Each structure stands twice: as structure tokens, then as C-alpha cells.
Length: 433
Ligand code: AAL
Image (cartoon, rainbow, N blue to C red; front, top):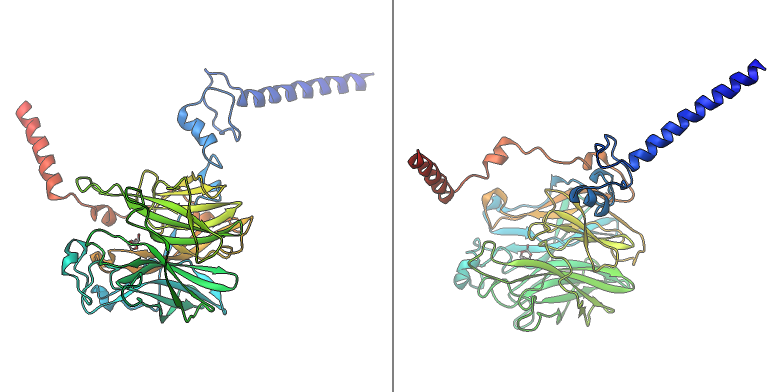
């Protein structure tokens, strides 16, 4: 009898403890207004009044912690071996690399290459440019390419696509290329300048060359495949950074447009990104009716991710320094906010052309650093590494911030105008005493 009584009492006690726990657990999700927000953040959005920011933390992002998101990463950079820059004197530039592809047992990258007897005079002095004196860093350029066994040491193979003869599109400069592999052929899309950049602006359409091998020979089509938009349209002048991917059996080519130029503003232009779609690599490309589809960024850097496409959005615009995602390849949302993003990134995207329905993401690529060594006409290619991949989880790529050295902070110093303003503000205070 005693044994039964003990068992009954013990069961009742355990049941009441369990009830308390359940109550506590329920309360943790249904805390009332006057309860503090819990120390252990609810994994699901709690049923309680929330601030806009905490509401957003649940609704706008994949995870409540950025480091748990596949589309959050930091970036690490490595200096490349194999490229000489004449000591950074501006007579050589390599910039705006393509995506990296892997063929014939090695990596390939294509990029804007300029080797000129003198450094560029600058876009503001474009009138002084000649057929040997470049205006901008990317003026009088050809499409060069290099190969690598490991992605760190590269062998410059030479010019892939040279400037065509006048008056073909690109006779002045062929730049900012990207690669597509489609039905066994290779295509290099590029900005096709027909005037020195800076004369009117950075104005150009996009043309394309094709080859049966990543080593060429490359055949100019002499066609403008992404034309400038009609007068008064956002992309009437600049069709930059062509970036093809394969989706839904078609070529989805993203590109940048510079527009709304107002010299009285700094920066004077807005930069956004558009999309043009074609069934054939040589076109016709149809621009998406919702263009521009990305409201920020500068050079295009995208990759298939799960069923959609992700974009590294850097440098310009309301949403620069973000990684964005479009499940439908058109309507982009911010997936994460990060820093020190690769500029003009050309990632290694193994499934860029496979029409994948489950994009695996990226872990490295080639990007560029402009104004290297403080010289606006010295741009260099670098390697970036990251964890934007479903196939790895690298905690060392998922910290929340970098620690910038005092020297880095002090390198961003006040200019004379700002110092004068500050001086006047202090003097004004003295007069008030
Ligand atoms: C780059 C790209 C395009 C521009 C110039 C060269 O970063 O946006 O290619 O025309 O700058």
C-alpha cells in the first residue's frame, strides 16, 4: 500500500513540475507586455509586441543570427602571383574580371587588360586622349586572359579578344567582360566602347565574341547584343558589367546602368542593375519590364543559389554592402549585410551554366582593387574567398565584423573644407560665451 502511495505522490510531483515547465515554455513564447524580452532569444517569432527592428529580425532574414545564414559571409583576400604591373605606374591595368571557369584541368579568368606607353590622362581630360594616350583606366583596352592550376598563381596567356577595327563596336576599347558556356561553345560579352570614356560619359553598349575553346580563337560577332536604351530611359547611355548565367534554359544576363547624372551631387550618378533574357547567346536579348531589378551595387556579381539567384551588391546605392537573393531571379531582397565585399567580383561558379534548380553557391573568385597604391590608374586583380556555399560552413568566415587598424582609420582623414567648418563651429561657440 505504502509503495502505491509513494508512486502516486511521485507521479503527481513530476506531473506538476512538467506542467510548470510547459507553462514556462509557453510563457516564453507568449510573454505578456510587462515581461522583459527573454535572455535566450526565441527561435520562432514570439507572440508579443515587438519593436520594428526585432520584428524585422524575424521577418526579413533567414535566421535571427547572421552567421547562421548561408548568405552571410565575410571575405578574405589574397594577393595573386603571376601578374606584373610595371611597379604600379599606371601603364598596365588588369581589372573587371569575368567569372572563373574550370576547363582542361585548370582555371580560366578573362579581364580588361591595358598596356599603354603612358598612364591615362583621366576621364575629365578625355579630350586629350589619343589612339595611344588612354582617357580612363579601361580605355584602349583588350580582353586578356590567364590560367591557373590553383587559383592563386596565374599565367597570363595573352589577349583573348582584341579591339576590332573601326567602326565595329568596341573599336576604341573592349572591357569588363564575362564568360558564358552554352551548348558547348564559349561566349565573352564585353563593353564595346566607340569613343574614349569620359568624352560624353562612360557610354557604351555590349557586344559578344564566341569560340569553340576557352583558349579561342575568339570570333567577334560585330553585333551589339545589349543595346543602349531609348532616349530618356535609365540605361540609355551605359550598359556595363554584362554578367550571364543560365536559368530556365535561357541566358539571364544581368548588367549595370549609370543614370540620373546630376553634376551638382556627389556621387553624381545612380547605379542600378538590370536583366536581359535571351534563348540564344547571340540574342535577341529582351530587357526585363521590371528593370532595374537591383537598386544598388556597381559591378555585377551573382550566382545561382538554391532555386533562385544571389547577388553581391557593393559600392553604390541605398543597399550597398548587402548580399541579396531573388527566388524568381527578378525580385531581390536583402539576405544579409556585410563589409569589405569583393569589388567587381568574378566568382568561381561551378553551376553557373548548368541550369541548376539547386544552386550550391560560391567559396572564391577573382575581384579587383582600384586605386592600388593610391594611383587611380593602377587597378590589380586579387583573389577573394568566402562562405556563400551550401556545401561548407566556415565559422571563420562568419564573424560579425573586422577590426580595422588605427592606420586604416587615420588614412580616411578630414579634408581642408571639413577642417575649416569645424574651426568655425568652435569659434562660434566662443563668441556665444
Ligand atoms: C567598372 C565597371 C565598368 C565601367 C568601368 C569599367 O568598374 O563598372 O567597366 O565602365 O568601371
